[in-house]
Structures are given as structure tokens and as C-alpha cells.
Length: 222
Image 1 (tube, rainbow, N blue to C red):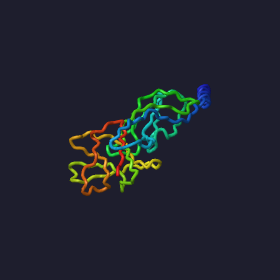
Image 2 (tube, rainbow, N blue to C red):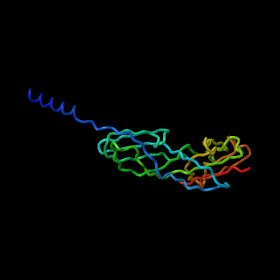
Image 3 (cartoon, rainbow, N blue to C red):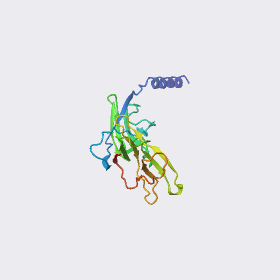
Image 4 (cartoon, helix red, strand yellow):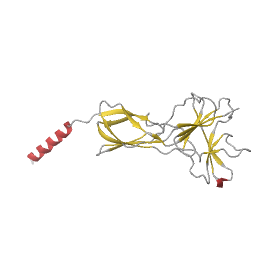
């Protein structure tokens, strides 16, 4: 019994003295988010715009453990990650952009093998845009209530729900990221310039004919 107790004591002592694997703080640098410009109704040069990117779920797995980071409303590039040193596979899950617009762009990324050590500060990740974008310039302040995306269905008897485009504080541009509507027989997503109530105007610009990974620039003319 004394010998067994001694062996257990040695094992516990060695376990308690085992060196802990140091943790490392790092960030993710998103590369390759590109939207090709398409000019629907504009003249001259369009102001430069800095893209905003969605948050999501970042998972790093080392074969034994899986570490999941839910970034919420923060872009995955704004979030600070912390993990023990080691080799991991990194995967990213980003929800597709809404048909009716949102404030940050969605994207996809392939799984990536990474090594995290004391020198790791930034992990570059190549992504591809999985959304489109409206960028609206209203230099003459023609839009009294800004621009909107609207959700309108044929069965809704004229009723619709409106979603205001964001307004960039640096350029004054209205913007939204979206997924083009995929039901041309009964479209429900439109770009709208007539305020929150339709009045006598009808329509709006459907997104059905638009494509993923394009930035659609529009100028409101006098």
C-alpha cells in the first residue's frame, strides 16, 4: 500500500510540474474581398468607399480540441483571438447577406492550416465576396428620407417592410450589402427611393437581375 501511494504521489507531482503551453493573442487579416464596380446610373468619378465586413464564427481545431469564437456584430478582423501555441485548422462561417440588405458584407473562405506560436500576430485569410452592394450618391440632397431596401410580396396587397440603407459618415454615401433576389417570377426585394410609404409611386428597382460580387453605383441626379 505504501509503494502504491508513493507511485501515485510521484505521478501527481510530475503532472503538476508539467509545463503549460503558452497562449498567444492574434488577429485575422481578411484579404481578397473585392466587389467589381457596375455603374447603373451615375456620371463622373464615384467617391472611394471602405468596405465593412460581417462577423461570424471562427473555429480552430488541433485534432484534440476545437475552439470556437463567435464574433457577433464585430468583423472577424476586429476580434482578438487567444489560443495555446500549436498547429490548427481554421474555418470561418459567415451567414449570407440578407435579400433586404445589411450593414456589412458577407464572404466565404476555404479551411486553412495555420501554426500559432510566439511570433504569430496576424493570420492572413483569403476570402471571396458572397454578396452584392448598392452604393448611392445624393450630392444634391434629393432624397428626403434617404434610400431604402424594401421587402414586398405579391400576396401582401401593397404592404411592404422598409430597411434604410446605412449612411457613410466620411463620404455621405448610402450603402447596403445584399444577396440578389433569386425568384424573378415573384420578386420581393427592391431598391427604393420614395420614403417609407409608397404614395402614388410604384415599383422600385428589383435585385433579380443583379449578380453576386458586384458593387452597383447609383447617382441621384437633379
